[in-house]
Amino acid sequence: QVQSVESGGGLVQPGGSLRLSCAASRSIFRSNIMGWYRQVPGKERELVAGISSGAYLNYADSVKGRFTISRDVTWNTVYLQMNSLKPEDTAVYYCNTVPPGRMAWGQGTQVTVSS
Image (cartoon, rainbow, N blue to C red):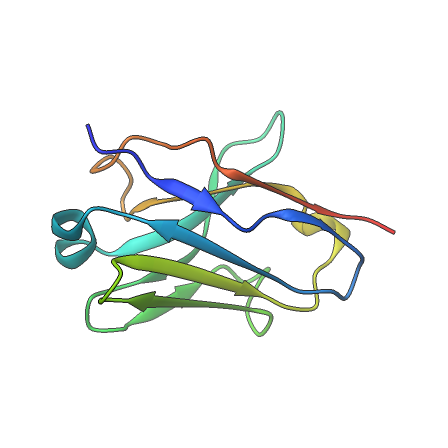
């Protein structure tokens, strides 16, 4: 099964920004809603943002106004621009289809927001 490849995480201070990237196969990318998920230890993975092929966007309430999801059809890549980061945004971030399952989960990318 095709696996996602996430990148762009790191350590950032509260109020800072990061941009995550996810490369997917062309067939998966162009025929599915793509989403960014995050997970912290002991909690279920949650969907934070989704984008359809028609650019319909959806965000979790906790990230509205701070995160922006976008997609580049040339490179079959999904991005998550994260601004005004908070300590509670600390998690491992993954991308997958919405609903998940059309791709295998990748290793994710760790985002740590701390001073």
